Image 1 (cartoon, rainbow, N blue to C red):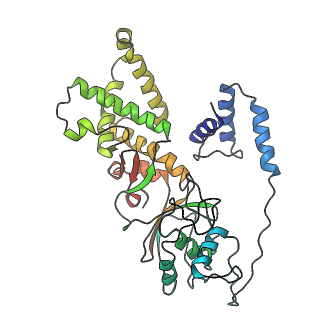
Image 2 (spheres, rainbow, N blue to C red):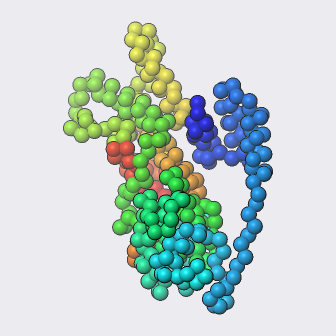
Image 3 (spheres, one colour):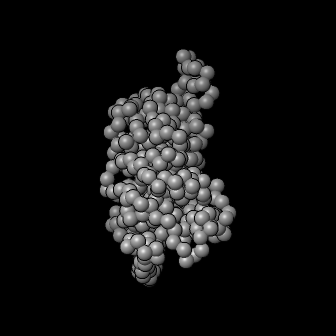
Length: 365
């Protein structure tokens, strides 16, 4: 197992989807992984803790009032994002960036909410709409294909207003677009807040792909036994771990439940291939836990499906936000319980050729 694979395994098994040495449960999980690999558990954990303790704390930046309006200039922020704004407005480094005239709420412990960009702030919001930060390590003026419309507009709205939020950019494929006071904020710019929206590809989520492979593999095997009777053309050809909707997932879980009722160990004595099916079903049960109906099992799988992606972008407890050029913005706080307890959740999750699509409003609204 490589270091990346070890960290990935530790992340999957941690309580929040990312590991912390301050969490006794996460440390215990790491010890179990290291013991299984026969690595020096104490030495590695102690070394990680010492590295954390040796990291110097940054001194807080002093605030100034460069434009004399009585409001301190925003401290911190993101120097690259600020440089992009200054370059766009032809401002020198010592000239202040214009401030929004209104405050905009952000409650990290709150739920879903809307804001509307007001008055003169909307002029700058729309002017900054298509600006993008440079790639990590690149010069200002180069663009990052990973950044979409409205990202710098939202950064400016909160970082440079008197809203009490410290905003930063977090460039990187597996990072959220922004952080507000250290909390991840993933920015989307779809034309409306409703409907299924893309969250990106999920090919790196190997355990989730394995679970889906077990479910849809058993489904395909069952349909083969029935010679595909009653199946539509799409069901025969397209439904697989990379392409499915909630209805397909529920139907496949029905077949899994039927297989669980069969004495597969007895079949395995005759047909060795059933040994692998038994192992796969055990793996699925370990990950999904107990469920008595296909609906419950499918909802549990749906949550497992989105968790790794959400854990990276924006992160547990973070926010998805959809921004419109009109200034209408809707924030959704990521709360996993809403998915599990939503009886209609399966109608709002799908996969299309390896890309994830969910309805933010129906799952987290």
